[in-house]
Image 1 (cartoon, rainbow, N blue to C red):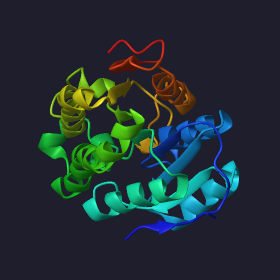
Image 2: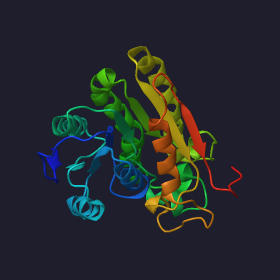
Image 3: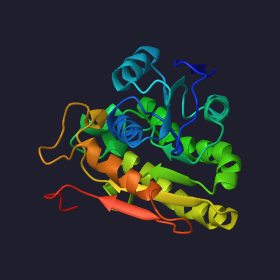
Length: 248
């Protein structure tokens, strides 16, 4: 089920309409803030109603922001979020598949997760990281075609540089592969596809073990905004962004 946590009925303004999954914290929240500052209309999804309400209260811009309770790994929930966004703002220009992360066991063991990790934690991670972007693409392509819009997928440096026995890394390799797979299809419909591969970012992803060189999520938000700002007819496909000091 999808539930809206913001007011409706405001007059439309210039700018693009962007839907961001997992938009209440980290990279998603930073992207939403930046796009709202630049005058765009933004819908964000989250699974926690309290966190979503707190984020909406923080960012303001009530006439240009929509909060939706939705699970990115659930088809009906994703479809409802897309429909609600289009109904609220009239169209969709960009969808950002941001929801996802690494299961906590990736940070509890010094050996390979496939050896000493907890398989009970893997299912939700795989569904969010791999199924989630595919569900978002299926739901948004019909709306992005008339606007000649763009899909942005959040990959990872871990999706282009293998990490031994690391299932999270494997899920992000899947995202990177899906981005190219999707591009081949979407470009024939006038839709752009960008995969953004962040390195170490200071977010809750690290479960309390943030590397000292980690960048602010604002840096990745800037890369996503850059992809949105490409001229008509230009498809920026891959952006990899690391902090200085990250050799891998």
